Image (tube, rainbow, N blue to C red; front, side, top):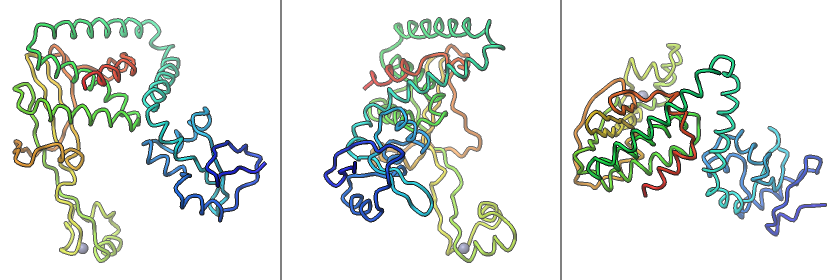
Length: 306
Ligand SMILES: [Zn+2]
């Protein structure tokens, strides 16, 4: 059986199948019907291992395989990849739950007695926190609720789920659009060092001195021919405060600058160490606590903000 990829039909090719000639694959790729694993990674914001997992679990069919000098290349149908985009939050959420279960199982020996009580305690605190918002000004309540869940989302995002960072960006963008003048929200532009991209001359000087390019740039700063990226390490800091609730989030300047109207001028700060934090009732929310809320609930709550 040969796979009729030229007509754009998707069908999985079992391992045993003979590879499609590279020339044909190139022709099809040029038409944009098939995507390589790397392209799928970019499309869906996933690592290659996760794209493999999508294929293993049947979400993605391998439309073609091609043997190259450096190994096998898997090709996926682009239509199928874009249809998968909407499903990714659910899939990632399920994977994360499974990972949490495995993580829980490993730790079960140590935490058997403690963990369930903690999760219960977290849910109690969540209910307490959410019901306390009823008495606040509506604007403060919305900002705090979103921040509370965003803080929890952050802990899942750090496990490498690109999609969760997208949700974070959407929430912060919504903050800018809807609450930039709110007394409960302060946005600060935190300025970092500029980044130097060393020119070939400076790179060879760095090599001679046995320094990494980063070390060289730090010590010598680069010459006028080196590229300078002025705002590379700049960040926006979002501070949400009401009473003894405090939340703090960061997003890169490059990603967020376009959210702000041109004439807006933000307070600026130079600061070294930055930390995202969540204090509800003046008490910090710990990482462990954050994980006790299921990711489904977190995503659902944040999507309801829009
Ligand atoms: Zn230079």
